[in-house]
Image (cartoon, rainbow over all chains, first blue to last red; front, side, top):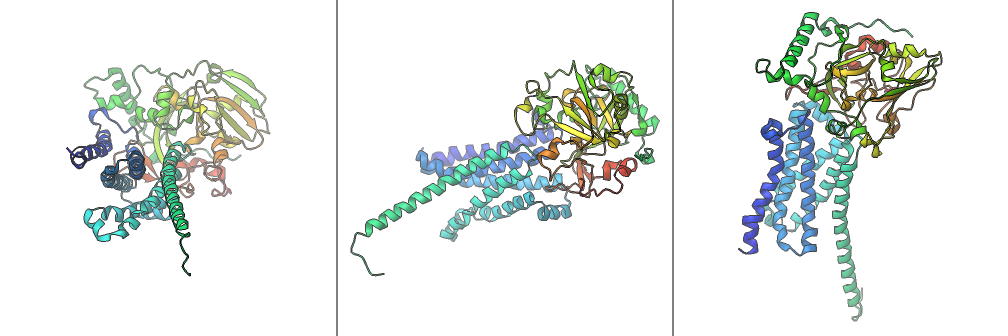
Length: 218
Length: 318
């Protein structure tokens, strides 16, 4: 098996199974199968666990590029789309649980929450912003959008920041868990800032090396 | 202080027949253990068979007719940061906690002060069961059959002076026994307080048990406060100090986030928490899609307590 086949037939199916594991576990808990339980408040547990799982997949998606560069595994990129789509999937379940089981389909409360509760406003914004990214995740859309695809998918940085912020803002007092997510996101974003700066200064160095050549009038 | 005679809407009162039949049913289920006839449903509602039972009389006058939550829910879904900040933490981390021997220090504006053992505190108090609604500031609620005695009948024994305008309560501080106190999520020890008229109100309960058994550690053993018309965080647990004061006590949550938690913390659907709505609540243990219900002013105890706050701006004194 060459690397392409290994990704297609081994790694991708493994990531797929791993991605579904939280859902299977939460489903068992919701129905009390195999001794799993969601505790006294299954609705909140489902809501929170789906949200946290979504955020973790978002962080994993953002970790692909750094890990790939640092470990020299260019093929890792093949897993990124699936990780990102799992993030979207769990965000969608998170929102559905909130709307159906928590708010019990009370649409006016949903409207009021989105308008008046800043942590819900930013969480809902993150959800909306994820939709175009999920919709343009196919190979065809990538080809069709070309360079604009890359620009569009930079939205993921904004989405991740909104997601962590949403998590931090709804915690009552013990912010250790959201701070951990924020720390991981900061590292992943900082990596990109440093890389971009290194690339810029390399370009400047190249340009100033070019300055020794006979100058051209401005 | 003008305190109206407590009045509970007739619809709220459980008829004695229904009430006692429920008791009997429960007692029967307990006596039978997990017998096949009693059915697992009934057996699962109440406390474990080996829990230490209290002797008490039911007080239907102060009990709501809503069905109480399962014992398991009341003892595994706890906000008791002294044992961890997740709901299931206290039930796990409080297992080895020993609530005996226990003593309570009485200080401040009272004629009778000093250290009192738990036995002193309980002496002469007749225990009663009251089924109260419990509304958390996080917008969930329970119905709990507490066992305790009116706080007023305890405080009266200390003969508060005319300068005693407030009562301040303090939780045990012992990070070795309360591992959550090793983390500075709140300023320890936990402090709560009431205005003296709130403390003397007949609904205010000093709790030593629930579901007819001795209070489990995770619910605030051996002695906790329950003020049913206020958010749950006012119900301070594992009390070791009672102090009568002239000025308003500096309470833990109000100190931690003054714009989110006030001293009064009366349940009020009209005054939202800055980050979430208080208009509705979710009843733990209710069936899916039938959990959310409107929150009642003063948690449904307005007839009995609203007069305590006459003329006060409840938006300001939240």
